[in-house]
Image 1: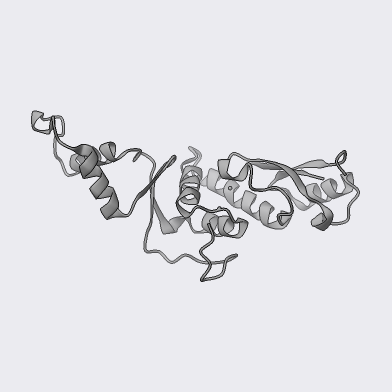
Image 2: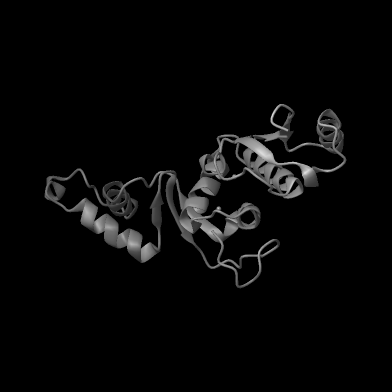
Length: 189
């Protein structure tokens, strides 16, 4: 019914879930559709509508809330966004698995351009890039080669790469290569 609905802020406890069902006079979420989703994760603003599993969405929102608690400066949340972009993730199951496997990725939030990365690598090696000898140095080309060698990919959130840690598939199958975000508020009707 277009005129009925309830907002449910996720993660929600059992009492909040029951209140939402009661307010729309339903027994389960099976008969409900998500009419609108709001999220601080840009990729989820438009993807999570329709008939997504509310239990999985609630689990994902809980995992993202944990990420925010782990790094109050939202660094882990930025890493999550970067990994979603790297994996081109559009699947709720994969989004859940990525949230639980962020240790499988290296993240450089300060690596925003090949130029900056090239200069950073040299400075990390103790080289004074302010020396006049570097006035015509191709930091961009050097940075691009170093990034490629390190396996990093640029995203709007920083550079990210897959490391050697084993990815544990809880929701996705071992062979699935699906690609797909705390503080979500879901419009149910």
